[in-house]
Length: 85
Image (cartoon, one colour):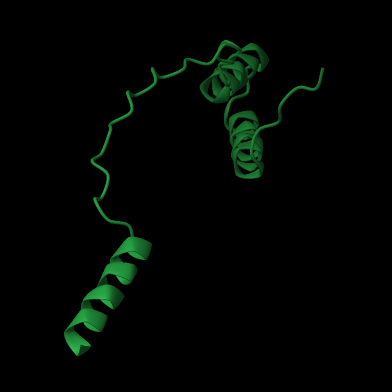
């Protein structure tokens, strides 16, 4: 199983912080302790594999139009034909 890597910018930050810690602190045990704390800050907690599913929303019924576009066009043609007579 592959271990997930941190983002490039995060890895760079950790690398620079480790260098700063090693330059500034001469006690080896204190260095290791601080570096471990640094890694703990960026440790990703793996969520459980089960995803929570939001409950389904109830379907809202909408009123249907009384006339469709086809019937509307047919009605307009009939009305215009009767007016022309």
